[in-house]
Length: 239
Image (cartoon, rainbow, N blue to C red):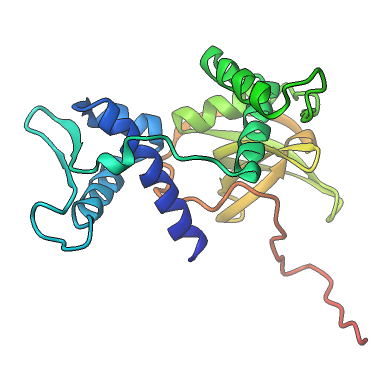
């Protein structure tokens, strides 16, 4: 299974139980909760509509649609009503993710309550078992997060240590995340005309340009990765 297919399946399996517990929820609310565009949600509902139990007759297929009032309805899928049982590894990963969001300062009271319950179940003693430390926030994290949410272009002065140069460039922030002990922003760089990942602590200055952009419906995963450059030094290693 490809990473894209796995991500799509996980989102569908997360969305179905919630929609069944909240029938008639407006399309916009479902999209906001599960990170859909309206087009993506309708495509997934069409896919679910073609699924069901063996026999696959009209009475065996799932009902998944948007009703006349604009609400999302899923029926004939009672086997999705119960919450899935997590394996130990899945529960630990979920706890670590929740703690990371809370440590970054972007979590809600509801998330804090859920994390506390999960932590009590996994580590019933005094030892929390899992701790998450987030690097000190930069003054630019707030403006970058805001720009990513509202689709605003920002101009950054950025120092690249690999090339030992400082440049000024306009970027379209897609997501702000933390990895390997640092904060990063994934963005479309208008100077490079390609997606780039910038370390936030190497941003020397940031101003909003007032320009806006529409983020792509499918973005690369928010992760630190190497982006080849024409000026990079190539080497051949013989073993």
